[in-house]
Image 1: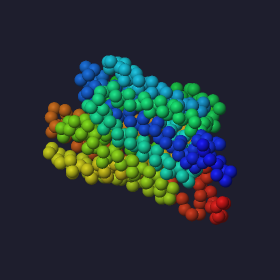
Image 2: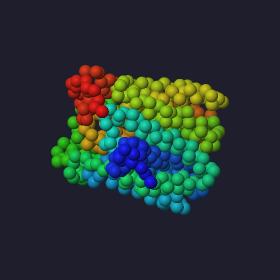
Image 3: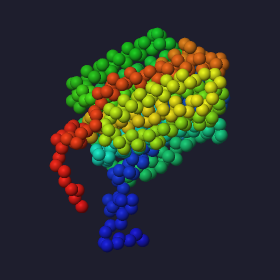
Image 4: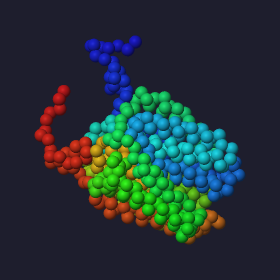
Length: 495
């Protein structure tokens, strides 16, 4: 039996068992990060398994590209919708609904016997992921005090980064060692665990809007879909094609209509005044170029290791670990110090390191290069990316009231996914203009200039990072809305 020494209630890991685990920060961090991990993993897990899928399903490469793109497309265009639904109907409730939808989509993908049903299942996964990812961040913001939020977001970023890091390795290892279906079956027990445990741990919360802005939600989803469709289709249809140019025009016009509607909506999804806040603007500007460079270079490097240097899928994933595993170590450390050094230092330094590392890598890549020459630039770039993850989250979250954290994280993540889609498309176009798949040498000829573009992109984000808030001095403190207040008199902490 559980004793109660000295008449005090039994404590387990610091939690009063009379109140249970609900709303406990550490438990919330673990479960929300696990959900984020799953959705991040499935963004890239299929990439290194494409050759195995092609062999077993007999599909064309164009069809298999949609196995990757269907998830990314839906994932990107529904981020704001997921945040809005969470604010209205309950963030825990919608988060769990997203986990359930994602798990069902994973089962459907694993049971697919042809490429058509597999693409449809990936769409379902994308819907679930778009509900889970932004709300995972919001659930953490809701339970952590402002002074500890940077560290929590650093851990969340690190765990999410493991999903990106593990994707190429897991996809290659499972597809080669087991079967391609196992890539999707791995999601199912994790999804079931989250559905079973989360109701007892996660605290319910809602945003300040009493009703959903349905016209705004539809305009945001359609505009994001059109803007994402353009770069997804550009490698096949061409940037100058009627389809791609038309999608870009429709997307821009629709987003313009969305912003105009937000000015007059009774309960807008996006308070436009937030874009006037330096932290909000800086974080969103940085995440676009950061993911443009990150996902674009990930797409190139994963293939470079296989097509250019002759490694199998598992070997390619393992050789990318010095780059992709850095968030595990660096992001929590960066999150722990962001409150002391400010978001500007981390954003600027992270972008510079990301650019230096990828530029170094582009210069080092040539036919016959040894793997040892690639490790240092991969690490430098990875450290820069990892520093930026928690700094972006802290900048965006610190600029808005806590009740709008869901909307803020949805905007940030949507822009990141949109940047990633453009990054893959632009780097693919640069690759195709300079090289090809005909030989390892031809692939390297195309990969080098593509990596140079990926290296330049973070430098463009320095203008946004420069306006991010600096370190809060001793004469000011930050309240829950992120505004600076006069310092309070120093008092001893009550016992």
